[in-house]
Image (cartoon, rainbow, N blue to C red; front, side, top):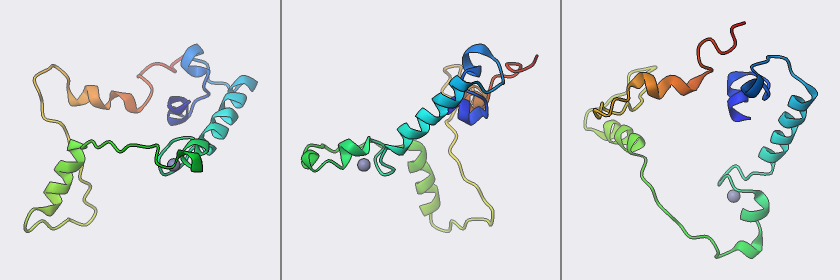
Amino acid sequence: MQTARQWGKPPSCLITGGTEWTARDRILALGHQLYEAALCPECGRPKRVCRDPGMSGRFTIHSEICQATAALQQHRSEPGYQPTPGELLYAVPEDTGDGDTDEDDQRYGGPPPGLFDD
Ligand SMILES: [Zn+2]
């Protein structure tokens, strides 16, 4: 559903390649909307779970570090750093020599070229 939404296409297009919205697509989209509305915007879990008083004390905390965010925060905290108006900073992984390229990393943003060409 998220991919179909991101691509601006009906969900069935991911299977059939069609571009017309069907009744099934509309039902899927509405169901997904209901699903998302039931999720907590803070933690992403179903509200019935994270807001249940019976769950108090039943969560454990885990920690992970986003290395890209850490690199951006470190860059911004360097002495003398002044953001340029309109500056957009983003972290790009260095070439690790594993054959992956930046082009590979960016390939998931939209439908593959030619998918919807008729
Ligand atoms: Zn929550």
